[in-house]
Length: 89
Image: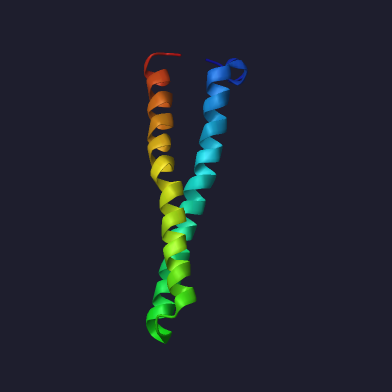
């Protein structure tokens, strides 16, 4: 399939849009986990104060909420693309 045909395909276009949104959610989720780790190490060094503990907890929860569906959707998009290539669509 040529590039013009795939750009006119609404399914592939929608899949590409979902993939871009999914990549952003994935990056943000991992960023939140990284922030949580930095805050945890900081809290460990200076003592566990309320604000740092709350920030660690919030970042882990928000990162998990973003990452759980993002990882699954990422695998689904890759599988759909692989299936299209295998079946010549």
